[in-house]
Length: 276
Image (cartoon, rainbow, N blue to C red; front, top):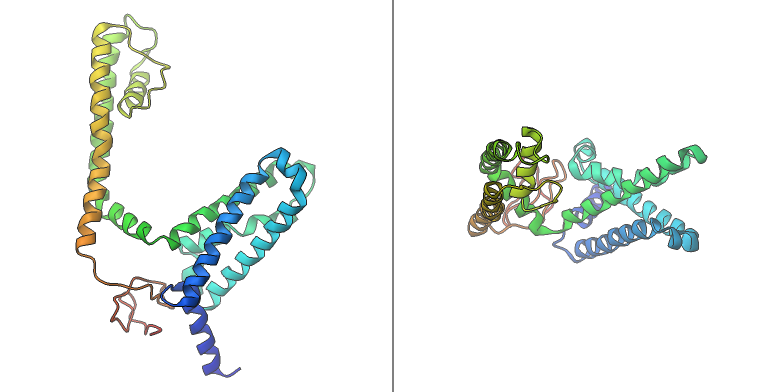
């Protein structure tokens, strides 16, 4: 095979695997989505002992077929990029590897003493669900909004943590003499966190009228506090949507950056020529 033919072959395969603007690329993504969902369903069914004992061979063969398909996909992703190390150690590269290797590792760990380890290794296949985020466009916008909002959210969480310490201490002072549940400030802080987040386990409860009044205020306050992070991220997503520049799924074969502008000929991150 000539050098130009090899380059053309890699370029076409890269467009199919990493991009979704072409019909082959869309078809590849749709097929991969169904395979990922099927693999997750198989893992769930395998955990049901009655189903596994009855259809063990079918589940095992199906899992091997899916594992081989993911292995071929993983290899194809490596050979179609100019910097394979970049992909291998990227977030999705690690997820792809973690979702593929458990079945192969099960061949190495045999014997009754490793049954527990094998079960744990099989559970690693659930990492395939993270592969779904690669094909859901809005997840990228959500992650970007979280990243931009992280300073505001960090300050907010710090405030909530301080508030829980104060409320826990107050409840300890109010309840400790008349309630055996509030035995220490850390335990009271735990109660404040559970109450403020509206989880309400019920393992600790105030007994005095003043304590119950304070608890009622904390519960009401909790509803407002839960809504704040959602509002911060939602506002950032709305702001990003208004500023959104038309982009496509063009992926750089060198640094794996995507979401390039429609008229872009070069990667915005590394300057590499795009496969236009």
